[in-house]
Length: 298
Image (cartoon, rainbow, N blue to C red; front, side, top):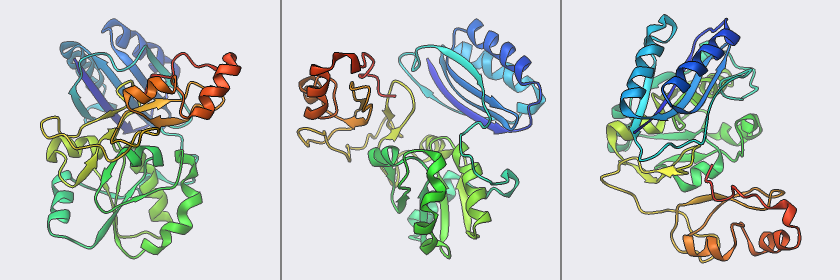
């Protein structure tokens, strides 16, 4: 089976018709995952049998709007999603930023980024992902955004201004978040800036885990993946209870908490799917706040 990521900023006018036809296509190929569409483009993550993923890619690229779309793909043992949906959204990534996508930064290819590391160039990486994604894995020289969701980027701009005159590379999982974020940064005075083409996943395909620490967080049932399956990195995070090295994310079973937390198998069982002893006790006394899907790392 294969897991694929893809996106493209391109005008889509016939959203309702496109949604209906696309959902039929995906279900006919027995794919699972999510495809978000908006007037500004498409953003998808799907899993399926190898031959059916190939058929999907062929069908999508027959449409001239998507003929040059880039697919990031990798093997997976099972479906990484429980169902298949195609949804119409205001944006293919919810930024709510007043940024013109036409002002996005130029791309830097994975090989070029690797050379910057190897030459010890004076540059920094703006990791545009959420802080819980950063914690489980990130590049050397990476600056963490102190945000829990993309819409909070403007709130950290003041802290980023000290890097305004440095060479900057932006990165995110598959590249889509950097498109509009890099435009926003450029419009706010960051001139020497490029975005990693294809994101962290594509870098892993080309350069392995060179200059990367930990794993890459993904928004599906896997929780996180190694950039290089043949040369896996050791965990850089610890279990919330025993503090031993661990890199498995869960969602707290206390629905009023629902926090993401990292735990080893033994401590996850000890905590009864909760992020802390406090949440464990709350669920014991208030069973109505129990989330039966807490063991899903999404």
